[in-house]
Image (cartoon, rainbow over all chains, first blue to last red; front, side, top):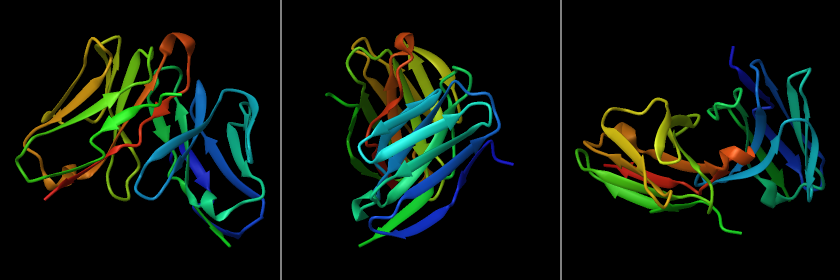
Length: 109
Length: 113
């Protein structure tokens, strides 16, 4: 069993839909990252969470430490949101990341 | 705001050649991390540096070496390149003392032919 599990692996939705990507982990963590990887591989860090909820524009990330679960939400999705979204956890402050497999999101116009 | 800068963006080398990848962290960040992502693979941690000293080592081949310089930029040196070294190499930086998030560069795509 992978230490970081993301679901779904693939998601196709229509423009404007509300999107949720889930991440569950089984190890003790110091922080959880949500990252966005575009075709060509460039990675953008979206959020770093250790508790609660963060919002940036149309993106919202939440984490429940007790349940070892995090969600990334996209409101009013747009085709430019199409990318791979990766959940990665920092394991107890040693700064090595354990990466989820990523969720490939396609937003159709 | 300044981000993590990696150079070059793309690099094409032949087998058995050497390559040097550079990473310029966000100013005042004290820690640099290198990751390798092969085609269709999850990114793999290679090595990290804190205050110019190697701090952690992951799945970095013996053919690779890395260092962090006095200006905190880091270089990943890769020798005797193999076809399997073709990958995207990411660098990230953070400020450990402030528990800052990891900031990633856009990566260097290395193709070995």
